[in-house]
Image 1 (cartoon, one colour):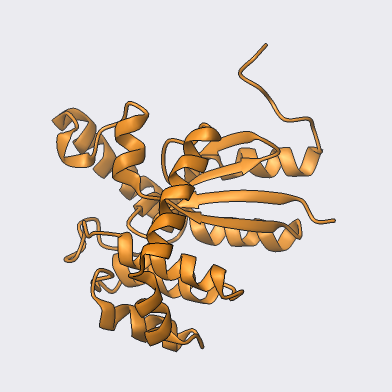
Image 2: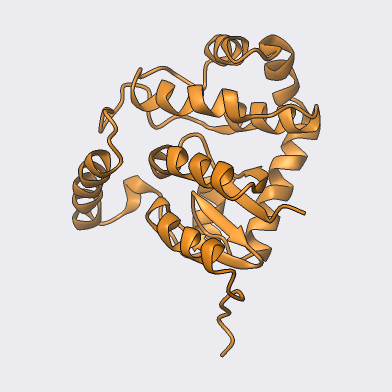
Length: 207
């Protein structure tokens, strides 16, 4: 059986975008089964002691801009540091991914378009028409998925992902959970690969 990873993320997260290509490479290299879990970041931050960007100290905000430039170069990307339509409410876009999963559809073709849509093309992922087109371009039934995203059932699944994240000790995006061990942030992908390669037992906070 393939090894499984729980992948907690939001389409509004720049770090999930920056880390997605190397994560996809890991999926292929190690034949991983990925459990995609879009999660509402604002609530997750507040419940785990974090702050949304606008409420962080200016020192931390300035450092974040430096880190974005470093990782843009490191990952070989070309994106806007302050895209025109960010921040945005990620509920509808994240819900589209949940709707795909509920329909048994692979969200990867959509994710590989949606992440750069925000950061490279500066599109608005809170706009239903934009999401419909991105899904259609990925060969998916865009209008049906966007309509499904707005339902209470998808909201309930979104909330369940938040609770699952808390239960798993995940507190930000992206969060990768392998055998109960949390790897937080795209800058931990190399450590995640080390764990996969070695086959070691998961580390625990209880020592």
